[in-house]
Length: 225
Image 1 (spheres, rainbow, N blue to C red):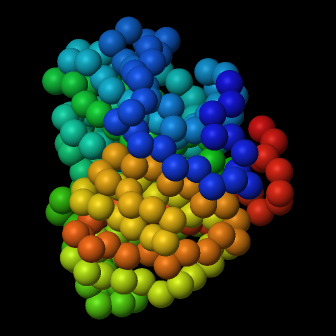
Image 2 (cartoon, one colour):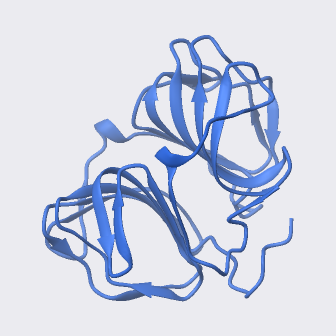
């Protein structure tokens, strides 16, 4: 299956417009933002767990990142509420589930095999740091080499400098409206910009976004799996 799998191309998806697709586990559905492969795939998805649903134990050969958007989520490492960020490194395994139901943003099979760091962060209890321009606040979540994942909060009227992304950039809008010269992106929007892409982002209304940079292929063709 190939959905937005050409990493040399810019992609924009309004997740609220996508259908829910059943997963192999009963009570768990997905909205597929990008996918390159079958059931084992490099993928970014919105995942919804019905109350009491769970996945059997499985291996994440090339890692997984999870942001809990709402509800409750658990695995062998603990229980996590809305705003929790989890990074499961390559070679890790777990059996996740939800007691009352939840919605997650999940990224699969995109990590460096040498990245062995597990991360658990309650973003609701973590301090924001000053950003590079007035009105911008940053909450670092994970980094390995040139790859960085963070939450970024934009006060209304904030504008950032024009810049270029080595290794690309990926954004999921959590709250408010994010903008650049190419368009407006409300909550639920997912954007992926390729290696060496450039833009000048801003937010008139203010927003909070999840940002990942430096993880996309730098060649002009798809990453082989």
